[in-house]
Structures are given as C-alpha cells and as structure tokens.
Length: 145
Length: 320
Image 1: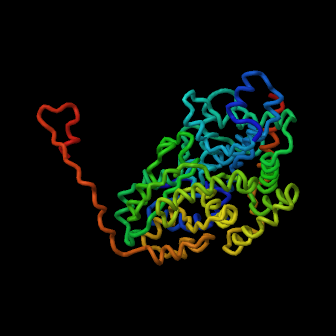
Image 2: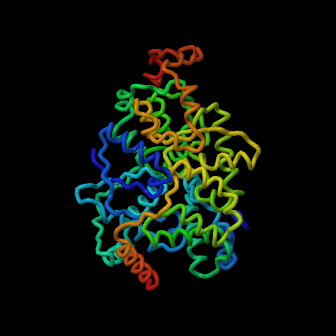
Image 3: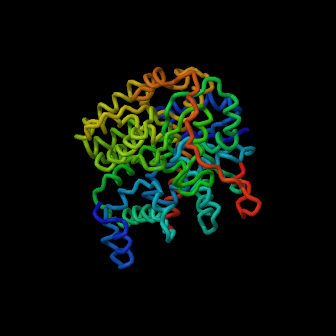
C-alpha cells in the first residue's frame, strides 16, 4: 500500500489525478465497509475505492497489482462458465502470476481436496451464451456512455 | 414461507457443508427455498473493481430469472448478499442505469420486473421470519457446554442491512443462545477475515485471521460459528498456515450457523456436513458438548432500586 486512504483522498482534493490512479492502495481494500459505516462525514469510502480501481483500469494507469490480476482471472472464469470455479481460478491465477506461491498453497489445497471441498470440474450454467450476450451489450453501452 | 434461493458458487464445493445443513434445517423449520433456475455468479469483488455496467448486468440477470410469484431472494453467502442488494438498490435509484441494464438483459432475452423485490440474508430470515423462540421450541439436543464465538464477518451486516447493527450485531448471538450454547463476548465478531486477500497476500490476510483467532481463543471459545462461506473458508482452511506463519497453536473449529441449528435439533452431524471442516469439530463436540444444562451463572448481587412514588421518569425499570 503506497498511500494511506486519507492521504489518497487528500491527493484527490489536490488534483493529483495520475498519481492517485497509479496508487496500489485501492487494490488492498477488501470492501469490508467498516470505514463506510463509521465515517462521521458519511464518505462512502468503499465505493470510492471501487471507483478508483475501475478508473485506474479504464485509464490504463493501473500497474502490476495482485488484486487487479486476481480480478482479471476471476472475470475470465465467470465469462467462461457463468460461475466461479475455485480450483480453475486459483491455478489460473497462480500459474500465470505467482507460480512459486502455488507450491506454498498446495498443502492447503490438498487438505480441502481430501475433505471433498474442491470441485475438480467447472460447473457451467446452461445459458452461457445468453450471459455473454448480456455482458457484451453492457460493455458496448459503457463504451458509448 | 417460500423464498427464491440464491446459493452462490461456494456452496457447490468449498462450503458444501453449508449447503448440506441448509437443506436439512430449512425443511425442518418450514422454509421453502426455491433455487433460482440457471443462476450465475454474482461477480464477487472482481466485476465491481473493473467495470460497472457489466457488474450490474451480471447480477441483474439473476433478479430477472426470478419466478413471477416470488418477491424475496434469500442468500446464505454474505458477498452475494451485498452484490444482490447493491444492484437492486441501484436499479431502483433513478438515472439511466435501469434503462441500460434493461437493454443489456434484452440482449440475452431477459427482462427485469423490478419493483417489490427484496434481498435477504439467510441469517435474517432464520432469526426474524422463523424466529428464535420458534427454533428454541424445536431444540431436542441443546448445545450445552459449548462456548461459541459468533462470527458475522463484514458483509452479513454491512453496509447497513437493516436487520442488525453494522458494528455490534446480536442476531447470531441470540440464535446460538436459544440453542443452548454459551456465547462468548467476541468483540471482533464483525471484523474482516481478509476475503480474497488470503489468496493474494499472506502479509495482509494472515494478521487479520490471527487477531480473530486470538480474540476468540482469549474469550475461551471452543468453536466459531459463522454465517459466511468466505469467513468459514479463511478461518478454517488457513488456520494451520496462520499457525505456521506466527508460531501460534490455534485449534478452533469453524462451523456454519445452520450446522449449529441442525445439531441442536438432533440431526446427524455427518448429514449436516460436520467432518468437512479442516480443523475437526468432533473433538470439541465429543468432549465439551454436554447433556446437562450448565448451572446458571451467579449474577452479581446488586441492590435493587425501587421505584418510588416520586421518581421520574424511569418507571418500570426499577420495579421489574
């Protein structure tokens, strides 16, 4: 995390647009909404962090950030099957981004496997085509707006 | 009571014990959960972090698939809960979003009827629609002797769900107490487990998990009971890694609240998916779960204040 959240918001107020969008801070936000419910000024901090993540991706200013890579792997999985596929997601993410960490996590994965908590094959929804058409149209509309 | 049911992806595998216990317990409690046909992933945190309109359209497809006679969607997953709720809210919020989402859904041959829908967490439905008293009346094997840390996590109660306090929730506490369990004072009950950070960054996730496990252990908990698949996964599957990372020796089993209800209703632990957790619950259930009610805790003797005829304005408090 290169800036604290309050510093990041001060940077927004100071107009440091590119520095803000290059920051990796929003990608450390797991969206627990604690700050949102607690902020005495009712600043929707979590939603702002989400907005900063989207802006940094759209403006091409997002650097190499784990959270962004993970989101990309996740979106790819959902687009293919319509559901999340945990094993596929984890292996896809680790093989392409963090091959060394895969080894470290193998023990955890094996424990889950032994308990029958890992699906070996993805489950697909019936109307993947329909879902893709919806997402395609949504993307076209975002581009046009 | 009939509801549209949105299980969420994790219930198929990593939280299959949640699915097992929900099926059994819902039937016993008279809840009809009708699974939304061909539902898709809610997008977790990934879609909202990358593209807004597709994120809403993805979630809205599920709302569009709802049977016409149902108007309440119930989900046992806290992340699905927040995404479904936020989408429902945004679609009803005016502006162009509704028209864009309608346009996108039409590309997939669907339409969203909108008005009158609500999204509920399963915990809310169990505690408020079925009711704690009604569940207590069905208990045949009270959870006597078990000291339980009630773990809500973030998204069961935030942001502002309306059914419980966002920082100091109590619904799960009440439920567990009505099952006969002793509920410990778990001050981090609504703190974050790290969510997907356990996969991405041990440096961020493990300290969060450690403080939760430490707090529950310090309060003397035998086990943790949660209402979120991600919380269960992180606290359970990563507990040994946290121990190795910090040199700690936590050994806290983590169960779903529906498993706790099922046990108290006399159902078979195996049928409830108990045994699927990585940190086994069986030693605790065998050694601590008692058939006898614990002695009532000695209440500190306080001088009772009597309402006097002249006292104002707190009548009814002192003369209980």
